[in-house]
Length: 515
Image (tube, rainbow, N blue to C red; front, side, top):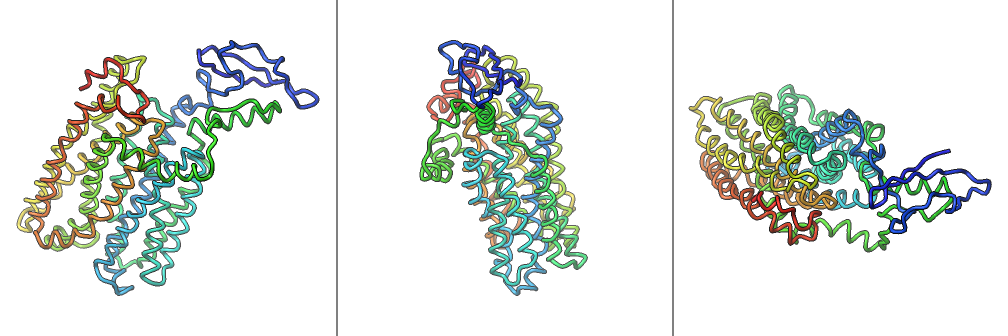
């Protein structure tokens, strides 16, 4: 005899004993009677249900957190690694430096297309099947890049590889929202947020030393293929479904199969969408959320600029360090390490300082959720310093000044990027919850578009203006955008009250004080 526990709306637990009958049918009369206000056939999670991802063991959830970060690192590492091999690629394919920049930019441009599909698709069919299918195809395109015969095929394979590599950029953050409660989500996101910085920082380092030792550019893509292939194997073997509505659908199917009673259903199965409606939901929802939400638009503009600045450094650093300080390709790759160190340091500071503050607020606002505006505190702290980092880099970039001066500005860049991203990604997840994958998808599309575009004009900008004034210009733009998290902190509760996507609707009374 098997037990299935269903939690009705009034949180009263009822246990159904599933007894196999000779005719494989189950009579409703054999089930305990339930209150008339509760649908006895609606499948839900009960308290401490082991099938609920938020009730999984801490070890399992931390593994998924670290693995999700690894998938993001894989994608961002693949985006930046070829930047150090551009001279070898230009020599082999005889194309210009502008075309060479497309090897990086087109991969990042693929991030503009992928999230439009993978985020909403995961909300229709679940996280796992999307991860499994997209990463497998991503592996194939990395292999194709390693075997590319001409410029056109390499650029096409890089773009398509970016499309499928974009899945973790959208769905990994949503996966963390599936498995962690708001109180502990911040710690998980602090670890996860280092990945988008670590990948771009490590990529030029690996590529630089391969180039310095005259290793074929094809071997770089074989390394990327192997890395992606190993990750795909672990996805297949260890990544479970985490999206709660889909898990309930699986539970409902299992009950129907065991009882022979087709009246059991999950809430998600009530959504009867035509194929055209599903396509519309998958492709249009991210932009519907984006353009109807001033909060998301402001966050996306700011994060896109920050992301673009990070990728612009792939062009700025060789100008300052390789040309200005006469460093080798491998040594220039090392100059990106302060950015990574700054990101790691920022994650540690979050765990030590901000997460305990958030836990105290979780107790203060219980049983209500902590207003998302409290997630903005780190962005408010980091925004001015991100602007300062570019002024610092600008006016220490003279070849006559010690190399350590511009290098140390990278610490501030990494710290600023990590805190801004961690703060604003947490805000998106908390504010939009059940459509977080679509909100993150819209954010990722625009952010990636800017990230792909900035390197295309970085050479011309730094050569025309010189490194001092080019970086100063970025610093002034960063300074102009720094008030965005402050404005959201002040007016966020009012905007959420008017939002049709915010899960909380009207915020609790205490939330008003967040502003």
